[in-house]
Amino acid sequence: MPLTSDTPSPAEPRALLRLRDAVALTVGLVIGAGIFKAPALVASLAGGTGWMFAAWVLGGLLSLVGALCYAELATAYPNAGGDYHFLRRAWGRNVAFLFAWARMAVITTGSIALLGFVFGDYMQQLLPLGRHGAAWWAAAAVLALTLVNARGLRTGVAAQGWLTAIEVGALLLVVGAGLFLLVGDGGAPAAAPAPADGGAGAPAPWSLSGFGLAMVFVLLTYGGWNEAAYVSAEVRDRRRDMARALVLSITLITALYLLVVWAYWHGLGLAGMAGSQGIAADLLRVAFGDAGGTLVAIAVAVAALTSMNATLIVGARSTWAAGRDWPLLARLGRWDAARGTPPVALALQGGAALALVAVGSAAGSGFKAMVEFTAPVFWLFFLLTGLALFVLRRREPGVERPFRVPLYPLLPLLFCTTCAYMLWSSLSYVYSQQFGGFNAAWIGVAVLLAGALLLPLLRAPAAAPPASPASPSDPAPARRCP
Image (cartoon, rainbow, N blue to C red; front, side, top):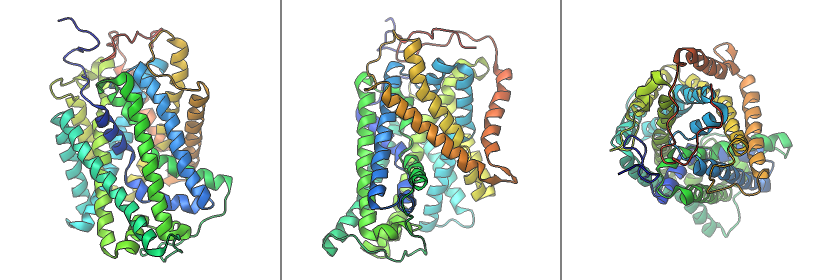
């Protein structure tokens, strides 16, 4: 039977995911341990209760704008390479390779390792494993979830569905604590209690710079929805469901975040939020006593596992896409059609994450700082992906776009402006930090420079890039990229 858009090559990704699978994956990518800590920072910086809630609403709206931009790209150019594929079409394969390299070297693998340590830190409170127990728990989580996803996309997505359900349940427990206190105190928000963990601080008065910094933490807590683009070729009815999955996910996450922030505010008060070092633990202690600390440990551990599993599913796909473009990396471009996974790229990602866990165990907090200092690299490529929407609309006007961003070009311009602001903010932060006696900004430069040094070794006469796995109607780029 000849191949059609509905019958991809056996060596290509297949459309296996339902709408609910894409939503569970996206929600799991976004909701992580950040919602159990970031609201305290936002409360201390936003400049008042109204501004605090406004920051979380604005974060949801800006994320929705970005999701609409990605929905257009993902439905017009469905590809398991996600951002890599968009960047390659707009800016050429050299830029796309630097993106894939940065993800493989530290952005994705570093995130997996850090999530492993978050899981390990909280599991160590529940079931201690000795001096390096957190590292052992982290390594076990990386290895176990890599093996789960190596069994196949359906297995990884099934695990994601259960983990996401438990994670959302944990957030609803926090909301339930707020409702419990609401019934008990007649509806008035609490005065600031003394935080049980010794935190100190007070809300700052409103200022533009303070609100801007609060938005940095808000947007980081909303971050991760863009990773859904990596499964755009694997969603069954991608013409409709990719946009629906992104919009539904952001709407659900925004509603949950607002409810959780309300619960924190009602149980602790604004000053109590601002002064807390463990805001969820403080709230649950107020509502349920000392058992609250155990509940929070379990909730954060599950949140870390949920984000880690989702990141493992999508993370290897940019490496797979690079393997298809560069002959010397061809083994990375192998796809297991029976399992719906890129096995070599997935194994490399898991091995690299385990290596970073070992580095993190030796470096301690320095490893966390090193990963965080690469944030400007992430926002640089995020901005380039947003700009790719303009480039591809102009260069490839004939490509069918099942979904178009409403209010074009205003909404894409707003998204790109937000990315540029986050790039500037992250650069400002990194330039103010030191790492090993050097300005921390050199870490991101070193990551990109290492990738640039690899390019001459990889550059060779390459065959024409294969068609998008699930979109044969997607034409070749109008100009050949060097």
